[in-house]
Image 1 (cartoon, rainbow, N blue to C red):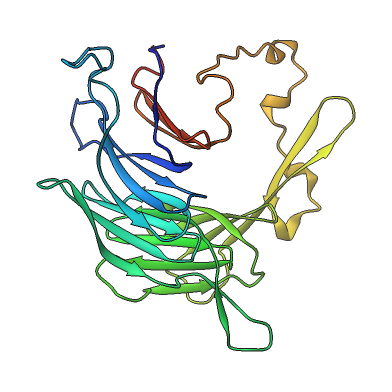
Image 2 (cartoon, rainbow, N blue to C red):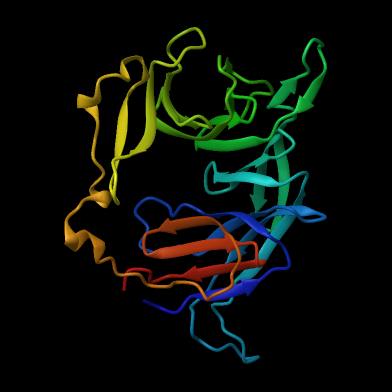
Length: 294
């Protein structure tokens, strides 16, 4: 594997994302975005990389990550996704969701859309509101779906000022992540170990399907993973034994390769595009390699 290159950026990095490569392009990933957290001032930044290993005229590596532009971000960056080649969507610990536009001519970022208070808690017994972190976003241009600690699901369209659809999760459990299954359906995971499938074609605020994920001990080193509809949790015949936890002795011989140097602190985000790996850490560093599988 090619050597991993580090860039120390004086900010704790919470999220890293490669910019999607245009369809049909044979070029490797070159541009990525980062978001920071737990700093006096947080930011969303756009970076570019060159050909690793080639020395520039000043003696530095041409492949060193170069900051193209950045912009201040209010609150911690909880999630970060590219909507398309020019736009980046950021989720904030303040409950806000922001769309940033990259201007390549003068290398700047600007805010083109912002949904303030997209996620919030309602005070008990009163109409008062307090912000709830937006914990996850997923994009399928022009649509953006967000989830948060308030258990709320929002469907936005980038050219609309208000949410197109909002689903208030009945159990109000924190939703940690969201992804598209198909265009009208999404999958969420919550704080009580449930995967929920939501169909935006259906009215109401109930998921179309719920899956429960949990482990239980069977003695010794083995465990069993159950994944089945929550309405039928007594049916153990639907259980699935994880192949990672098999008693086959060969499964215990796992080859481990250390990709990052020791003492990097927490690795908060990882993104892989083709053979290009990108990650950010609490050690205020970004790590990149373009030949992960060589």
